[in-house]
Length: 480
Image (cartoon, rainbow, N blue to C red):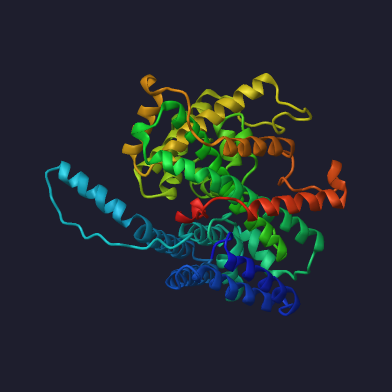
């Protein structure tokens, strides 16, 4: 079930009313969350439920075993490793099997060997990378004694399957979420209103901006060889906004939806296109995934407290894994490694990438230096997004060749002025709200102190969503 569907618009109010007015006790609310989450996820394909239930059961039992045998560290280490390997094996089969088989076949052919490997037409379960990483993180945290093993199966299954963030994150830590399932929850009107605002803004970004960018990006991408370099640059910029509004829009809806049920999810985006460097960009983009890689790969490898060469290696490993996590194709891997190399340059040169305040702190506009840094970071990120969008490396190379070929530069005939105007408005609005957790934190600020002004804005955004003239697009991160 998608957030931008009629089914969800009917599903959400029914679940909300039953949750608060029928299932009032915590244990019944948790059980209801499990049931509704499985309905939500099974809407795509009921077979996906079996896989998620298996992952949940393995990690739940694994956590109990780790806790039971905590006095035997070698055994708990094996139990943890087994759980991690089981989860990675499931992810590997469903997401990477054909990728590894195809590449192994190419490698063997280069060595003069020919093997007929079996291939399979495997359906990729929606959101498998997200809930698998959340489950792995739980097992490791129990082993490291960062969190106590959950002894309540309903509570744990709710943690893995919580429908607002199940399909595309944020990836939550057990130490943050499990206590929220254990405590008594009471309806908070202010939190629910704030959640509704955040959902509305997320819907607007997804339906009005991202889904209007998509047709132009898709149609141009199908005819790269006959498109002018100027148009390819413009399409590259459009995709930069499309991927941001699509994914951050989903996360705004997810975080806002969780607030309706009394839960707090971590922020997954913090105005990344106002970053002053690529490392800062990655502290503001898909934050929960970067924290996961930092906690479970980067720091165990040694982090930055090692030689410069080893630090660069650690960074590249993390970004290689990040690229591969996004998809079974070398274009994703190259996208991740490209970002890793840039971050490595910053680390090796000791360039400043951490700042005490947001850009343009206590000023209306950024300084000329800050503006140059933002523009440079945006340009690098946009160039790398080509690798992310391309279905394979061959098409990414073709895109770059055509875009940088002086002979193809001509006046733009791209019919996308309305979409670029929307993107410009988004930048202006987000710049003015860059110190807020989300754009529609309005009450008590300027004109939005008045109820009539807030409702005018709400109605305007709702009408823009309802009358957006574009074909509905799936959330891009559903494929991961």
